Amino acid sequence: MNQTLSLNKVGCVTLVLVYVLIFVLGVCGNTAVIWIAGFKMKKTVNTMCYLSLAISDLMFCSCLPFNIVRMVHKRWIFGLFMCKFASFAMFLNMYSSIFLLVIISVDRCVMVAFPVWGQNNRTLKRVMIAVFLAWVMSIIISVPALIFRDVILSPREQVLICVLRYELLSNSHTAIVVNRFVVGFVLPIVIISLCYSVIIIKLQTNHMTRSSKPFKVMTALIVTFFISWLPYHVFSLMEIKFKLQIVQQGREVSMVLASLNSCLNPFLYAFMGNDFKDKCWSFLSRIENAFENEGKSGTSKRTSSSQGDSRHSTNV
Image (cartoon, rainbow, N blue to C red):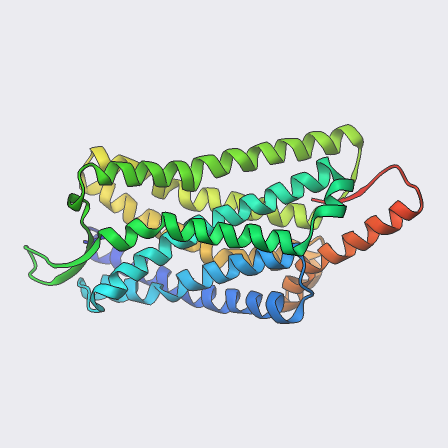
């Protein structure tokens, strides 16, 4: 959603094609996840978190056509409201995704570090409240995208463009970019890393058994988010000090990588199971299979507890 596209024609065509692919895969994949997690699966902590992630990703992917048309026509033709909303949707997706990943990580950490307490107090209602608060916080932090986006007449090409007008408030550019980097990336990654450290230490110390599937899915989601959004934050921070064309080009390309995160999550749900090689052809079945582990692990824990086993079956 940058105000200009400073890439050459070949680069522009490549980015447009990638955006189209992300849009198609993202809409189809996230719609499938919403359908399965929202209507076919039992409502559990896992399914609610992944359902919220899919809703966030679908909303973002649904706004990609506006950016695609902007890149093709080199102008903004959708008016002021969509200029603001498309940018708002991007940052809402970024914040809600990382906040939801934090909730998932903390939930796993609690279940490993305090399995008995977690089994008794980890309710769907409490997780729904946490998810709701994550969405509210994401909406509030994304408001600057609504405030500073505007449609203006380009002085050079004399066409309407959708731009960020940080000059409306002194030093707002630096404050918003730094805040976005710290709140939407650094702090969540630190919390997630601490949760991972506790999980790994606890598992190694107590020799606790665990199901590898949810651990793989969670790890893949977090690593994918980190790789997808880190370049965007780096180029955004560089753009504060360096108004160079290569920085603007890097930021444009990094936006494609960030967008890619929204279409990859459904495939991670589907293909991170233990028997990937045998069942990768059944896409929808694998998504449902990734969610089902939550219910199975809960049953396993109750059975183990009734037998007086000192070791806990932990769903990481």
